Amino acid sequence: MGGQALAGPDSSPRSAKERVCDFGTFIPQNPVAAMLPEPPETENTSIPTDAGRPTGFLIAAILAGLISAITIAGLVTIPEPSTPSNQLAVFNSNKAATAFSDLWVLVFALGVTPFATYLGGALKSQSRGLVWASMLVFLFGAFVLAVSNAASYSALNAISTTTAPSSATAAYEAALWYNITDGWEVLGFSALGLGVSLFSVAFWNSRVFPNWMAIVGFIGGTVGFIGGAATAWIFTGNSIPRFVFPLILGSLVVIIIWGFACPFAVGRAQPKT
Image 1 (tube, rainbow, N blue to C red):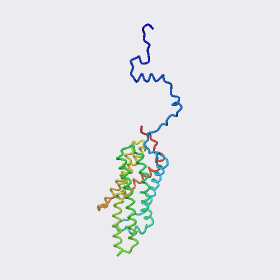
Image 2: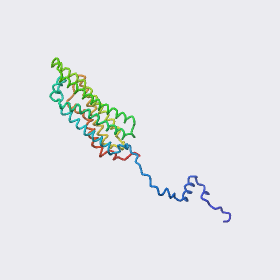
Image 3: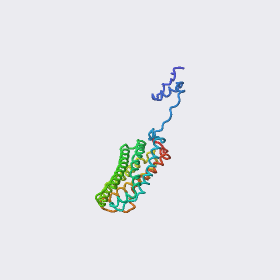
């Protein structure tokens, strides 16, 4: 008593924050708040909500892989003409297979479009410029492939079903279209390979796609790009080894692997925080 002041909760020289916290210990918990459920924890994942691993994204991935496998099967079953002048003879002897292969590439271009769109959405936390470049280059390559193959079939079919002044004229026209459309086809394969490689760079450490998908994609996409660029060397009048031609299919092989791996691999990495 004698002259001593009562020590209140704010009598000690403490910070305002400490006093507020200390004062709060004397306030009972709000009974209404206690009855409310805890808010659900949300993961900061970069997979979009409409493709968050099931349904649309996985269906698009599997379809892209399946369509790419059929595309490769169609391309490798048609023999390559030994010379451009031999193109018409090869076409006439493999007309049904050529029709399926060339027109199926249109299905390929349409089939991989949703897959590329979903990949871009899943990588929205990555560099926006890199993701957009990946999507645009990838889809540009796919549609150039589709247009070049459809034009090739249309031209060769028209030449084979019309009466040319001479067989030499028909062979010349077929060789001309062969060089034109194959030049665009090579451009399409090169762009597709470059697009796959750019996607792979965005995959790396994305925490959405495992790094092994990035490594496989970068190797396959680069091989496809180099194969396409090397094949273009033919149009300058030079020759290249025969083993270079299959390299252009590298990007299609990657799409097959990515497509069938997505249901098991995508989203299993730890999300970004």
